[in-house]
Length: 181
Image 1 (cartoon, one colour):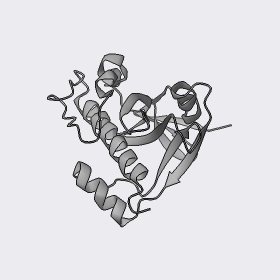
Image 2 (cartoon, rainbow, N blue to C red; image 1 turned 60 degrees about the horizontal axis):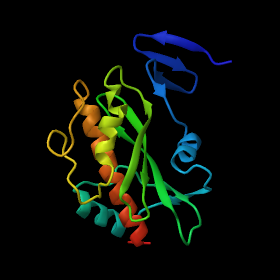
Image 3 (spheres, rainbow, N blue to C red; image 1 turned 30 degrees about the horizontal axis):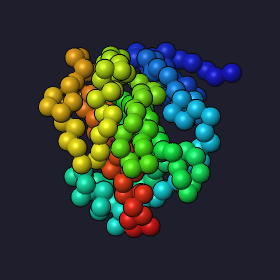
Image 4 (cartoon, rainbow, N blue to C red; image 1 turned 90 degrees about the vertical axis):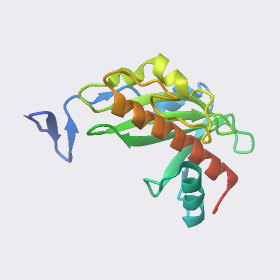
């Protein structure tokens, strides 16, 4: 039994603090099944070395926010049908957990919000917003308000997902190229 204590805008669970308004739509397992129905996926952890980190920074203009990433490889390793990356990006106050489905050439095929922890702005889950990322590469500018139409009332969340989508494509390119491997 978990002890739940309500305090202002959060719920204290033994072992951590979770916002009372956190919404979960996908677990990593459910997301992989949604992305690749009936296809076996294998998780491959990647720890970018300094060369890979420098290549990433050259592509997107900022330093890697995490020391390790896990790519989900769909299908056989010698002929994958695609990849997926689960990542987080800070929204206004809390991280937004999302998953990006990528084609074998690291082009974005789909993006889903998995966990949304902000009190408002969940409109970024709408298909009309998420579909703007389909077909994009790391080299494509994804500037909110210019290249990507933002969700009214969710400007920061819109920026967070645009940043995360471009990061996923860039990470995939660097990882697949074996830079620094």
